[in-house]
Image (cartoon, rainbow, N blue to C red):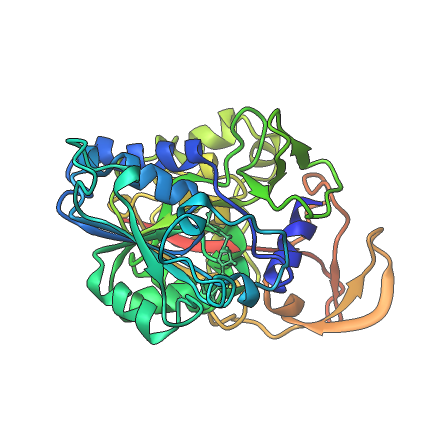
Length: 399
Ligand SMILES: C[S@@+](CC[C@H](N)C(=O)[O-])C[C@H]1O[C@@H](n2cnc3c(N)ncnc32)[C@H](O)[C@@H]1O
């Protein structure tokens, strides 16, 4: 159900997932632990925000002095331009301001900036935010928000899920530092994977992890339709949705990225791995690519120097000093060494009369009757051998 919610957001029906304060605070603290000056003297831009309500604006404004920021800029997207219509209550900040303009309030984005102690309180904080209407609707692709991007050092937000690729491209065009929320599915996008492979983008501290039994959880508008197990209403009556596979992407350094994975040798894994699949089947080779399959990140053999296919969740443990990323194990990313015609089998392993070449362009291995929990998925038309295709692998090599 959580993925269904994410798919809706992907289609652009609903991009209104709001990030919780504690999630922002915890993530930012991880960068500060690694380098206390990560944000010092930096201009931080929070685009795709709703500064009056956003926890991003609240967090960075309240921590302006602690982080040593030079300037904070936050921009919002006009209510009328949003795809999902929800009731928006105007903030007092806007309504009570002499700048309030009812002809602009729904059609224009807003810009909030923080640079100085405007109310002479002795501190720069959220009460010193200054605002005005943008010329347009606050679309991040607009000329005025793009100019703010160019002025900024670090771009931080939870961008609309439906525009994730475009948003990353927009950041990359200007070669900026960033910290953004996205979904694990994005790793397999043809626009995103090369950035990960070339160490221009990596997973942040929290990525696809359950905390207190929950995936990363967002606040959604009051009229958001709630159903399924990954939804709830909190003590303040706010609607919450937890989304599997979600986390932070960044190009800011953090400590976990430089911790080596503690691994056992291949021989020890075969004897002592906690995964019975590894003890039973070991490390089968793919039929259509010269690499072994490692079905669990913690079972990567420490002493194996050739290419290996590992689950996508490996990226959360990826240390660029320890491993090199070679490719994504799908068609278009690597050159498969075989082009076999195979019959597709149903979920019970029975023939369907439908055929595929090269297991639909994924990695595949011979089916192991004793170790594979699922029946075979394909049968070779020439030699009758049975195969299992292996989805979503990243090909890596020990450095
Ligand atoms: C996932 S929400 C996150 C909001 C806020 N950053 C947060 O995390 O609480 C994405 C926001 O981007 C806005 N948005 C959608 N399309 C946009 C666009 N083209 N340009 C700027 N913002 C956009 C949505 O209306 C929504 O408010």
